[in-house]
Length: 373
Image: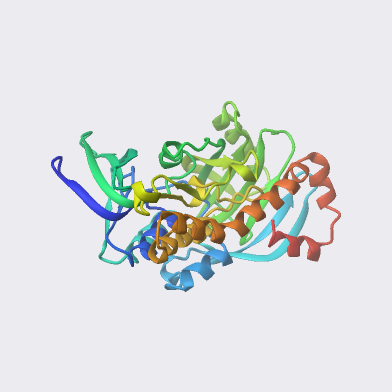
């Protein structure tokens, strides 16, 4: 994209993760799509790399996740592990075990030729033009700004979404996730181990996942946690007392939205409509940009895929901006209700009493409710 080009597309999508790819895949049926991402692709995003059955179902409508992406073990079952009491609750919920970078590369390969992908390009902001179209400002890797005119804009740019901010919606408070890829020095159970233990009160949830010759250890820390990396070292030292976990090969960190309430979840806005807008100017949000992530488990890929698909399908089939936003909102409404339900349970689940009570619930009941939490 050169500095003299005023590029025109039907849809501009900000963010090339699962939400952005799905939005681009379906929105391409309406017209040309430009998808931009701040990072250089393929990006190496910090992620647990667990593909939930809901994600598998959404992707299977296009093509199933290929076996070539699966690690050893290829499937892991979810279980709860009270580290202090040495109590384990197995479940029948399973995930496909992948690394995020090749998974994202595979997703991008599914896009049709009518989708142009630009990496190292940041979204700066937008304004509504007299005809209702949106004039977006982008900044390339050369630090120069460019303009793109679009009918529709999709924010799939994560928990610090610039699109969300420009739409006038409030920012999220954010969890801090720190995870280490450690050398595996012995047998690790082939499970997605969700654990908690005493001594470190600053984290909401921890997880251990075997991945080929490595072990992924991650902890999700509460907003405002100080010295998260020092706490991570402390947690690793405690885990190494009982598990064959070697030195850290790589450490990475990321953030995730913390919902104040279900009202903080938003499918987007109509930026230009009516006579002035000629039915153009829908600004849709998908994935974490809209707040679509589980507040209890932190699982986000299935929510991103579902809401990205919804945004893209709404753009492809809608008659005007208001109709497009309404269709996306209707499709996302069950997810918003689900978030509200989870938020009612979450404050008790993370208390000491809640974790203690869970130890006395029969395993089959724990397994059943895990699908809903």
